Image 1 (cartoon, rainbow over the protein chains, first blue to last red):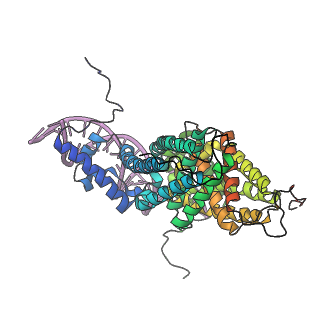
Image 2 (image 1 turned 30 degrees about the horizontal axis):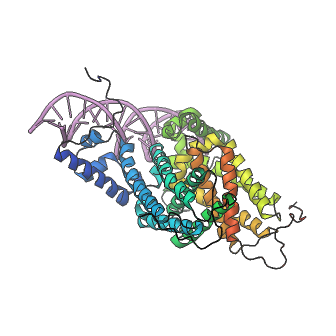
Image 3 (image 1 turned 180 degrees about the vertical axis):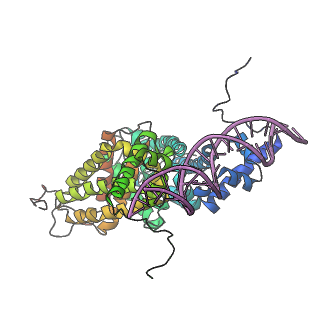
Length: 228
Length: 228
DNA sequence: ACCTGAACACCGTTCAAGT
DNA sequence: ACCTGAACACCGTTCAAGT
């Protein structure tokens, strides 16, 4: 007999029929709606199921528990942010350090503010176990292209670019998240953008390795065509 | 009759007899023990009350709800961190920028790591509404002495030191919190300390105002006696 | 293959009854 | 003044019964 093991932590069945696929889609959509309209405190399996127009039992057929449900929303959101970073990293490849930093910071801040409602609603679950895992794995995925673009930079060199990249990603993410969650609005978008630019640039300038031959410092951004 | 209003959101009575004072102390202690031994997921009013050796009813006589209970632990922890910052700010008054930054970063990182267990356990509640409020008000309280020491710096000048200070506090706090909550240990204490030094120093160098007459740049730390 | 909803265990909070 | 603990409402999760 094939794998008679207990049904324990299996990530639940995948939808195979049409109606079940639409059930999953409805649950996804309902999750976001409940989050936006009621907030995480009222993010209840019964409430989400009701909003999706299905029974709780159906919900548990596709999501093993409440955390997995919220994790789905988190993952979608973080994947969007990852996409922005990856795209901008391709665009700014080979440019000067300041251009790279400004371009990336601006893109990320803009993207985050476009999703400010959902970002706010996700603040609490992001700190829970499952959410923190998603955050960490996304940070690792973002650090890769960022490390690459740092290495491609035409006017600076770094030792251990990957570690620098990871720290920048974590630092900027947590800063933006805290700023967005702050209901007193101590930092608006423009102020945060300006300070994040200075913080990342200042950090990288502090950390850059002595220039080797072949890279020219303090020059015009070399005429390297951006990738594709 | 004096204030016949409803008993709604009153922060509960203060202990006036000896036994009730000890009940509050026991609840405080039990909260920390439950948090450390069972984690926030199992931080239950019934569990805390049982651990403290009192009934749930007693708990609700002094804490209006579960959030207020965890908030008490959060506040104590953040107050300790605030104390460290205030003390170090007094010690490093008038020193050079790099000395100030290194001294403060080192002190804060060391203090946080001495409380790493409770810091980890508090990661989730820190993101909840009540916790975020505590974090924000503590950040404001920390920014004040930090702004002052930045203004006292003997080899750099800043416009709007308070805003810089607030952003540094928020940035460093959230970075440390994320690093500590990370169970995969991507950043150990020493690495984080080194990077935080560079990040804060780089940021401030990027943000410093042009030197006015009267402050000397790139000098030995002027022989200014630290306060008291 | 998928859906339903009653049922169970557990938790936050209250309140009448005690000392 | 303070404590107790049963009671209530609500939530996460399961599972026998359906189509």
